[in-house]
Amino acid sequence: SDGIAAGMSLEEMQQEITMDDYSHWGGHDWVHENVLAMYHFLTD
Image 1 (spheres, one colour):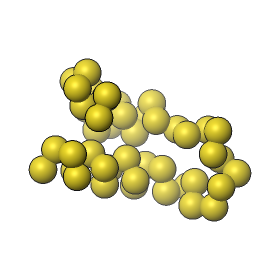
Image 2: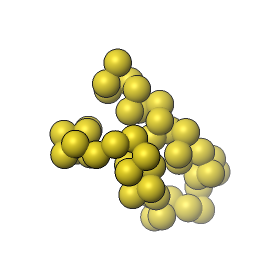
Image 3: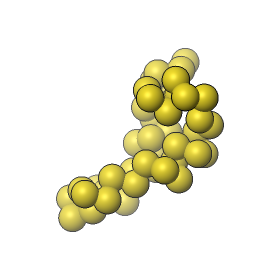
Image 4: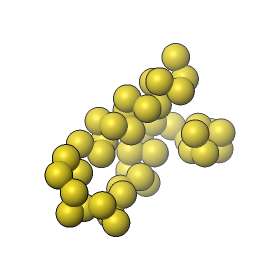
């Protein structure tokens, strides 16, 4: 929600939010899709 409040676009947030600290977790390759889902959850 910080990115939305700062006026960032979805694409900007998908590039900036990488969650590198969790790269060893299963499903980490879904980060972009999860950012997309949360963006729509918070804005729709």
